[in-house]
Length: 113
Length: 116
Image (tube, chains in turn orange, red):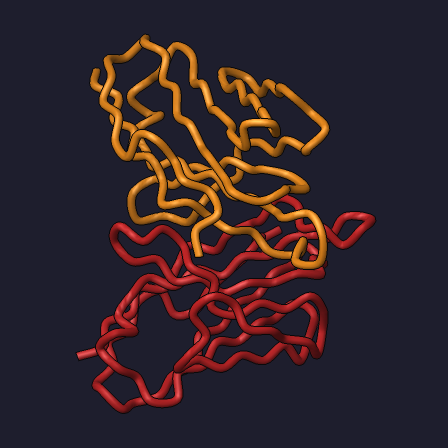
């Protein structure tokens, strides 16, 4: 069962532009995480935001969380060709099943030089 | 510090054959996971473990078994491989928060399995 759903499924931009990806989820969460996956590789953790946080920054990444709308967004500023990858959100539910993550299907980001 | 390693990286099986995928982590993480990734499906959880000697079913456990005899190792077994198990398999590990919640997961490089 999919908890996080990313939007859009695919995004193509020019180098230097900003990229925004959105994630919606259905149940109460403990935390929400964003991951990047380069083609043919394992996932790499980018950022974790807790349910009581509204915004976090890491370098060129900015993540927001709106628990009232059950949604999160990932903003990559000043994108580079090396940012080309799939991006996944994953949620950790609050309550009894908080030891596992549920991943969305991902957004494929292409940054054109 | 190798992080999370997986062996083998590639494997081709015939229908009905068995195999074991090995995952090892050197970060002393409590939690370990096995996922499969298929085109357009994202990652789906097969089995997971919250500690040495414990395992539990995930979203798609049928046709797989797991064991965690040592904290650093998590084995995934296919007893009788089927073409539907052709996929890329990822192992991951994470530490546990104060209330047992999972934090960031560290992933292995994946095993590409083809069942003919």
